[in-house]
Image (cartoon, rainbow, N blue to C red; front, side, top):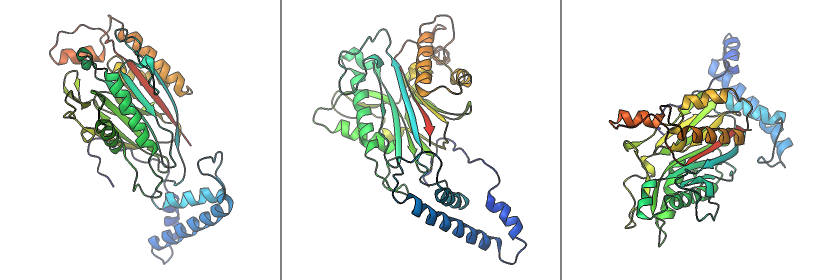
Length: 364
């Protein structure tokens, strides 16, 4: 197993496993409990495989919906009792995005190849799911390039396009993760594609990528800089990324410099996170235009009142709320609090910025 040093993992919850109950009854017999457990697991997995093979031989796992046939359920039960996670469960995302450029940026002058005019210098991608993975990502072009005549938004979109292409090329490789690019690898390979062309797009951006293993339910996240992600389950946060800064308002960022060299931060500097997700969980990716204006807890509290809201409604609501707060002069925003903590004389107000949100709801 990969060692993910930076953040906690979620633990699997549930009732006492069936094999524990069986062990209590069978423990009175003479065979050692582990022998009975092994025999039971072999029998139920084998029975599930036979029934599943007969009933599902001609079906496409990517298109199967509704209740799983008995054999499929038995095979999954055997896998779960063996200490694993259901295989071929094929989770995916229902995804929506929303964005709004800051007034000082206006609409983008060039909006081709999928770039959205109203995202300012922000960008995102929503990859077409493969048989094994589903991935989404977000990037925030660093505005400091504007004073040098460089469009950081063009860099952010180029980076996201390459991330999308790499994520969609992830091959199926059940039952192991061999050959599967994790989010750090997706970002690394995407940047390599961007940087090694004869005339690379110059600029820099923060990035946050989330990738779901559709078989195991493992969500892997790579976060570089001060964009971020939260995962919500039944109104509670089960995972939240932390921003990365060299100094106040100077986030980690992946870059192609004026001379064509790469910057000091790379994909391998991203913080990594994992958790197990379930159908109904919400994965929310946000640029700092949201996080600098709305505390995460305020987002969570608002969404508790909208338990059945779809991703489009949620993404639009968060963008509108962040936009409204960014223009206010009468409240202490997360950005203004951080500025004063850094020793700056910053007024209690919002922070104008481009705002982008991508929301994915996990589905079976």
